[in-house]
Every structure is written in structure tokens, then in C-alpha cells.
Image (cartoon, rainbow, N blue to C red; front, side):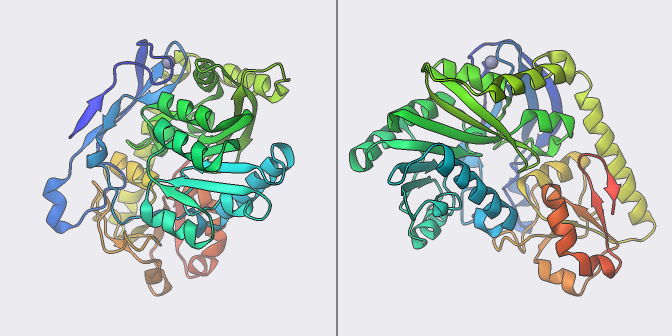
Length: 409
Ligand SMILES: [Zn+2]
């Protein structure tokens, strides 16, 4: 129950850890609530640390599994058109570079099969997804999916029934797991001798340069750059042989790893390490002013929203993603500042946002209601959403974009 606090780095196990950002105490971002349960709401510290040894940026406070929401709420990747397109192009890269027809592809955290659906024609696929209702959607699409948490034990059973995989992928799951060693060991069980492990994670360099502080939340334990990932794989006799920057989730990295070999390592690996070095994210000094930079964004947003409210303007918010709740809570917003938040997720509609207690409404409300200002919490889909909501903007609603710099459009 409650939460644990690590005192060593998740990747190198060292203890040279320095706090680089403190966002205060927040409830877990997926714990939407209602009027009856407000008194049960718990808050935990949201503090970010830098490891002086391997340079991993991470949370040390780990909220217990049973304090995090795992109920009926399900996030379906295929509900997002830009994500569907991202995974389609990701699959093309793997087909062109890593796979031959008939090979087995296993996706850890496979969601509703958004990546694997691109392989069903010429390859064998297997998904692993912890939420059983999400796994069921994938099965309905014809994608064999195991529901459960990925462990060494599960990997051994998979090898018995399916054989080994040429490609194992894990997207936006690696950062959410406290015991990263277990994942790597389990991946090693699954891979053929020349198999490739590909993972995508939100990229620390984008987080720092675009001040994406709202991507910090309890479920998101690690904020990866390439250097600590090289360190991590090295401990398991694996090597990073290719890496790409990807324009998804506010900026991500896709990292390709394999067992150590004499095969060439792509020059992109050294190139990106040099970029990280030049950007200063391998050194604590780069983070000296980060707290101040983040507080500047908060102060600007709070001043703006409260001045609009003083003028009698109606302010609402758009999208209630995990990161939106970090932003709302760090700003100290409540339902007096933000009248409601619209979100398409059926489970969230009718509930209150965690901590800030703002009502969540169906996007239908915007067909008749025209707020003066709409705070765009799902800012990573800014271009897509502004285009989609042109009619609402024609009616006079203006969007407030919070990240990377506060602007009104
Ligand atoms: Zn470390």
C-alpha cells in the first residue's frame, strides 16, 4: 500500500542521485474521481532525479500498483488517427530492415494491436497486454494476445508454445516499469540469436528542450536518453546498434538493440550521443535552471487563465490525457478556473479530473457550447486538433497552447 521510495538508480544501481525538478504532491493521473470519493484521494511526491553515473532521469517515488487505477478505463491507441499512422510507418521500417516473411513479431504492451495489425498478412504475431479488455479488442481483430504482465516466466512459456521471435517491440512501456532488469531478461528469453529488440520511449532531450514537464507523472518512472539505455543493455551483454528520433508523443526515440556482435553499429548512434552531449543532458548543470523554466510556464498560464476569468470569460480544457492532469495540478487549477474538460474516453465522461476536480464532459458539448478559451492539454496533437476544430474556432473559441511556450491561437 501507499508508495515506496527507491534509493538507487533503476539502470546502473548507483546512488549518485540529485533532484532536478519538484512538481509538488499529485494524485496518480489516471485516478479520475467523483464527489463521493474526494475524501479518499491520495497524493504522492512528483520529484525528478538525475543519476550522476549513467545519467538516467527518473522518479524515485514508486506508487504501489494497488493505488493506481486499473479498472474499466482503457486507452485504445487505435482511437488516435495520428498514432495509427505512426505505427503503420513503424511497421514498414521493421518489415524493410529487420524481418523476413513468416518471422515471429512479439509486441509487449501491445494495446489493441495498433502495431501488430500491420504484420498479420505475412508474419506471425503475438501481443502481450496487461489490460484484459484492451487485449480482447486485439483478439477481435485476429491478433493473438496474452493478457498479463510480462515476466521471465511468461517469456519461457511463450518460447515453448510459439518459438523465438525475430523482433520484440515495447513501445511506451519501458518507461513505466520499475524493474527494468526483469524486462530485459525476459526479452532475451524471447529473441532468436540474431533477434532485435526495438523500443520507443518519450525522449528526454525533447522533454528538456520543449519544457514538457507535464509528461512527468507517477506511472512514468524513467525519462530516457540514449546514453543510459546503452548502459542498461551493456549490463546484459546487449548493444544499441541503431536509434531514430520520432515525432510522436511530443518527441520520442526508437532504440534498436541486439546481443553483442561484430556487426556494424549505425553512425546514428554516435551522432545522437554527440547531440545529447552538446545539449548538456549528460551533465547535472544543464538542469540547474529547469525548475525555474517550468515555473515560468506555470506562472504565465495561471496569470492568463485567471485574468480571463476576471473578465468573465469562459475557459475550458480539451483532452484529459495523463499529462493534462500533471499540468492542471501543477498550476493549481480547479473548476472555478476551468469550467469543464472534454474527452472522448467513455469511462472518464461524468467523472472529475484527479486533484483538480474539474468535470469531464463528452466532446458533444462543444457542438452547442462555445467557450471563449480552450486550454489544449493534448498539445502534442495541436495541428491535428486545430484543423479538426476549425468550425468551433470559426464560432469564436480560441485555443491556449501551453507547451513549449504559452500561446493563443
Ligand atoms: Zn544510473
